[in-house]
Image 1 (cartoon, rainbow, N blue to C red):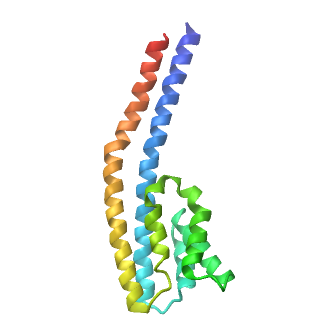
Image 2 (cartoon, rainbow, N blue to C red; image 1 turned 90 degrees about the horizontal axis):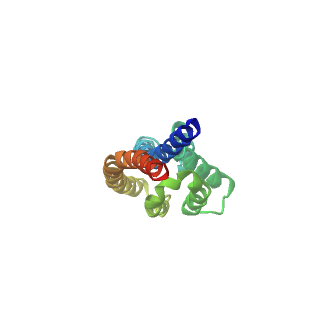
Image 3 (cartoon, rainbow, N blue to C red; image 1 turned 30 degrees about the horizontal axis):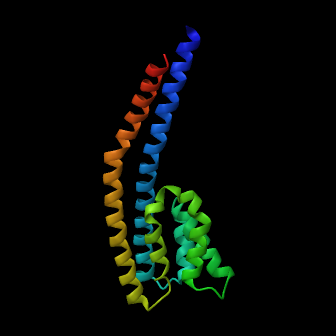
Length: 173
């Protein structure tokens, strides 16, 4: 009797934790997009108010931001400083590939992040500010979509995990 009860509790707990894990991926995507949006706002002020070179601005951003956005900017800055022959776009893409495993939950946003890399270091100060503003708008749209998905799917996955575990226990016993 106690063995069956223990098994049932383990099955329900495992299913519930799986549902929570999937739900956490939705929350993590929202957090990362918020972090990237905030970093672009900070970058815009660095470019607009100061004459900070791009590698130094990325380094400053990377130090101030949480991971994975912070590590993405830090890696890009390091590539820019170490690899003098690479363009800002190439450095961004290398850092993105290196940090993508940490950003697994953002597969939908990979094309957006790749698109960001195409504009780094091109044009004058005014052109860079315009590109950052366009990127911010794209991120706001992706963030709104991510929040909607989180609200819709987050609770569903938690409940689905719990109910799935209970269903399995009912069928087994």
